[in-house]
Image (tube, rainbow, N blue to C red; front, top):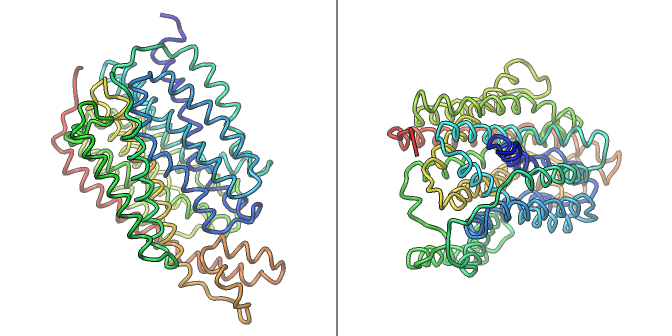
Length: 500
């Protein structure tokens, strides 16, 4: 077998393809203050800039995963990488917040074509469950460490370049990955037969987006209740119609029998809840470190390095620990440790990072990486080879949808706490209060526009945000703790496979 087609080299190629997409989920967090000021974006626009990527991807992943089972995983991955590269160029040179939101939509289209095929290619390349466990452990390492490494990469780029560099860096990386992937990935005859049900795909996408939009708008006071209820009704109705189509179709786009397996069910729930909590926490920390503590983007990225280190250590341990101690015990214990760390961080002082804070970040990275990689091992070991793309897309949908809902939920939670805590300086113009009170980014934009007269407002914003961040961290800790209990109970009888 040629070296380029060795299964471990194939693994290297698909992991390199995964890296820019996973980093893109968090690299923008550290650049938000720079983007806000450079484009004059409102808090709502900034939430959409961050949120639109995971929300659009969550609606596309299942359709793209099932399509790849029909047309081939190699072809879908290569086309997706090319689209992602073009979208990165567009995002880097966006002149307005609206243009950046549109570019992020295109990024999500490319990413949704790549993500399911990474897991599917791993599933097909490694027949031995032990080797597959190692491969999925490395995939989990790249996923956790890449997401945690994003803020550091963004901070380093912003230290020397403008904010668009966080997207432009994707271009040379993808060019290299495309070359390697063309050499290493072999053509396989698609396992799934029949035409791709495009109508079912559109119903799923529309249902997910309408439901998520309703959830997002429902948290906003200015949105009419009738609008929220109408959108929620439309979204849930379309999703119910989609489920009915899958149950009655002789050739469904998504085989719902996959959900009959406990490992797949709890794995998707773990991905949904854990990624949502972690995304909310990372976004909160990125804003506090820069807006409140006064760190530069690079300093804020360095602050989060322990989280990246912990994430890198956790993935390789997952395969060994789950085989030795059982999936339920490992997943439950690791998630419980993550909840304790989040609770500790809610009480920590970020002005002077000390040994306890560094330790909490490292343990948080290790525990979340082990827990989420363990769920990936269970999900993909439970997946039939012919449905590897669809199963992989379900897992990644959990991550993306969780991230999108996490940004919405924790963003609104933080905004509510912040607006109630913010105390405006004496004689501050009432006309500007409504714009400045929504979020710390809105406060800082208004303060920047006022020049030296805005110094008092900026200080008031820092104090309000610093006293509000504990709400987010404690809520995330509670969610992860409940997830730990559910994982332990559901997976306690899981049997690790010894052969195909």
